[in-house]
Image (cartoon, rainbow, N blue to C red; front, top):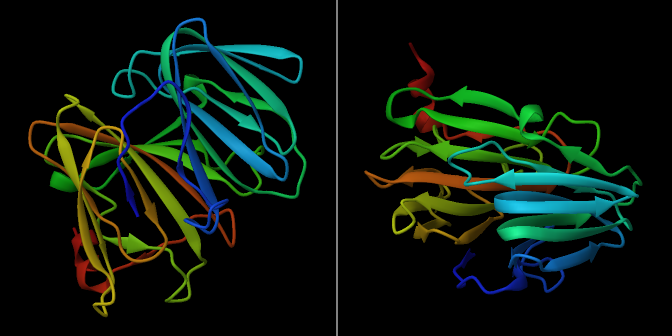
Length: 257
């Protein structure tokens, strides 16, 4: 499922399990003008709110947290974890874009703010599939089901490579995933592939700044066009809160020295 929707002020649902598009995940985009605000609460669901750019103040559980980010390509993320039933108000100090990811959750928890200094940075791959992966909510003690992070492809580089999947069809735990893309410069594009080795899935999308893709099955490699840096937020939820992947056997040789 490939979603392309022009940014509009306020709250917009891009991918929804509430309407049956997805099984596990919901993805909401918030575009806030300076001085505007949005209040959010999700009964029976936990949420992760990630600032992509701008400056905002989160008010939740009697506390305030301030965050600012010029661009995903300039600074690490700030994020807020919101447990089921808790309320947060997001106020914009300047024009801001945020993403809100939610999934069903029965466990209670506590509001947590993740600062840029808490983001874990990982170098992955080599050569033209070298990229940087940032863990936002991965090994933390806050989220119960959500896994959230960001991947940065230099121009011309690939990620999710060697191609992997986590759809449960080869014994790995099932995890549904959503990608949300940004490009720098913003007129650029990337490639999102989706395939299964038995031929039952073979799709590809030219993804642009502000697009989203739902990944419910199959291998899903990503490529950035030459001259354009590509970013995507990734969110997963499913059978367990641990990313266990199954790599395409045809391409595992790439791990050899």
